Length: 317
Image (tube, rainbow, N blue to C red; front, side):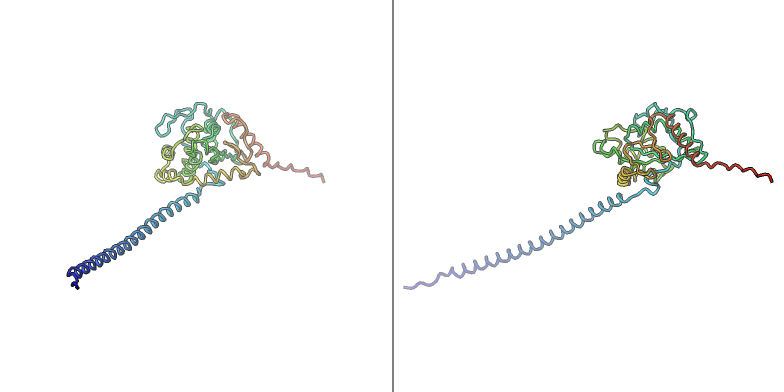
């Protein structure tokens, strides 16, 4: 006995087909969304990489620009003092950036109490290599600033300072010596008439060895206090550390050999050269240094002087 197929079978088959078709549509939609999402993520990743690359490129270009920056006023890595005016009385209290820092009172005596170069041959050439964290560099500046400025103003001497960074590791990781040397180059480049005053301020109001030293902002404040005219340019130069790479390279060059000294190399600061001869006396004794300068100057005069010929007697005819 046979039975007819249940009328529900076609309906069930149609329902399954409909569900299968719906599932295929959902799957296709999900596939399309995954493709779109991957595309968007890819575009986003490319954009992020591009932005990152631009940022890295800008940073590298900025760093490279700083590393290639050279102070165009430097001669053999030194800065000739063009104006020795504007330095405060070395016996008076000084302030830096509004702080209570003071200059030591064991400073220079009156220039009248010390000998002075005669300038009869040519101005004596004085070259001073300084690290702005060197205690002896501070002593030399405090003792001799007054007579150095007088000799320069009188035309008896030319004075050149060479900022170096021998004590970069002695500032708790802040690299103060290097930054201060770079700051000095900024002032010498953009405000040469205030370089002597700023150099004097750095040396006489010197931070202690193994301290952090001054920040770049404080160095810029000190330059402003020294009377630079283009404050914004000098401040940007100091705070951007434009010449720190130059200062490091200049120090390396000095350690290898000092120009005009027949192989003499920088081993400590200050190193003071007078007509190429190194001063080895007490750095805090202005009279001793003045006597040394006078001796070197006299030697230069006598070595270049030409005796006047004595007329020979005419034989009697």
